Length: 450
Image 1 (cartoon, rainbow, N blue to C red):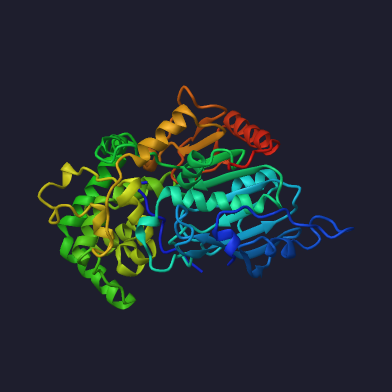
Image 2 (spheres, rainbow, N blue to C red; image 1 turned 90 degrees about the horizontal axis):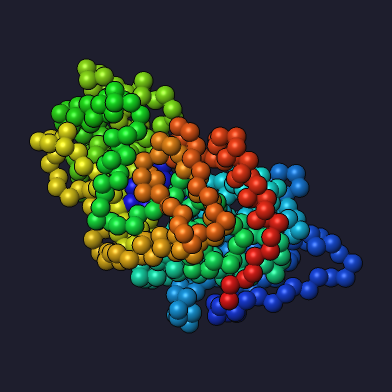
């Protein structure tokens, strides 16, 4: 996903058998007890699973914070392990299970149910991705941060918990989480009965960014697009006044710019990304809020800071998202936006390179075929996939497309939707089709990939 970053700072909060890749055996159930009599005991008995605590839940729910022992390298399980954080919202072992990931860490509310879990009245397992949050392998061998390794984490977790939750499993996520769900299906297609990916980009060729530039010229009205370009120009024409405010904020927040290089470089990068951030995150009708060319310095800076989320470019935030940028620079790819209207105002050639976000001591070696492989699988072999996109979302300028070999799958578009969309926002007929697919998948039993 070469275009987006999670909207701002995310608040982030053991077993030899599991480390070998052997599936957990079926758990014995005491005679005369119901399947849900003590879900805590049953979950804690899964090899490799550790119960960390319990959160308050809605009536009829048990919410457990857990960790699951994963190999650092699934190809060499004897080379160490780490604990992957997960949160379980349990309703009943007889209900479906939804596997949800944001693609990052657990976030501050991992007990919040995703839309598929609500629609299906299902259990939910929220996963933290390797290298994010506290789910970090010792030694931080960055070569093990790949989409296959992360998919294998999900595969082992599902295999272990299917001994408890024997009904259908559905996977879901938005943005990078939606991508994560699709990547998991590519490598372990039978782990779940269906997948719902919201706003998931599909960057098949990192050398070609023309789709992003073209989409920016199609979104909204010509007047709105011109207003955004004007704001970009004004921000750089008044660069000294803007960066003075940025540096003053950083000093008060004790924030630094060592990774990107300076507040000036960070501000220029933010300005280049401004149209993308606007169309991804601002609600419909926000064109009216774009400052005029004669806006005061304070009004201009305040609007740019809010839309571009300027704290994102500091070391303190980048440290949290270093695994994300590493993935962009090694497999997922990253967009460079053309800006001919800013000619003569740019000072930092190459500032849009993903290397700007990653400390120099972390290697980046791009694997050009990784995303093309995912795209081919979706078009030639994918099944039970649902892609929900926003009409105005620049993030899906390169969307997943169905092909001649894709089965039981669909692509839906939310009218006037941005990067934050839902099945509930679809046109009525599309919404019913999407819900019918979910219900059908939830009524099926998916086999376990060996």
